[in-house]
Length: 180
Ligand SMILES: Cc1cn([C@H]2C[C@H](O)[C@@H](COP(=O)(O)OP(=O)(O)O[C@H]3O[C@@H](C)C(=O)[C@@H](O)[C@H]3O)O2)c(=O)[nH]c1=O
Image (cartoon, rainbow, N blue to C red):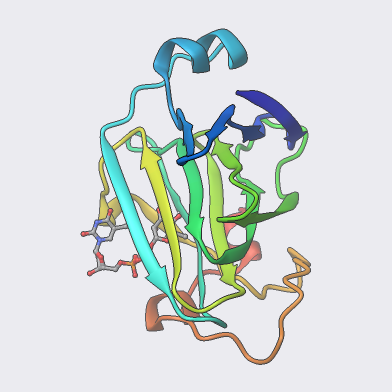
């Protein structure tokens, strides 16, 4: 596995080593020892999540706060997304900044987002399967939902039409009310 891109002082785009042969391919998606050797991070995952979405869906922006902040290792197994991370770590030089990543089954890359990042994705193809490992359990009471289209964040989602969002996400909090 290699680090192919670093963003916002902690987000990492990772490329697994793919072993291809006449049957197809094999790759390790997460190996605790190798991840630590590569990144210096000692992560412990407690939950694996999966979602399937139609083209045009947007999920996010979601973040869990302490003491249940979640690091996330995200993979698009099939289909494609434009995935966005926003740095919500108040002590970070990139606090309030966002970065976008094109993830897809074809690219086979993984995105590591440390605890303290908001995560969201816009789905570019039907039947997009997203899987991610998280370092803490889901806790609805610690969930922050940030408004994905807040002009103060200025995220360039590159929409093709009006995105389909959940009721929860349409009622997300503004950046102004978070940043106080
Ligand atoms: C996140 C989560 C949801 N749920 C339930 C709550 C609800 O009934 C249903 C759907 O939840 P949501 O609408 O929050 O699903 P979704 O919008 O896909 O939420 C996810 O979005 C992406 C962007 C993330 O970063 C994730 O951490 C997670 O927040 O699943 C769990 O049982 N466990 C979980 O860990």
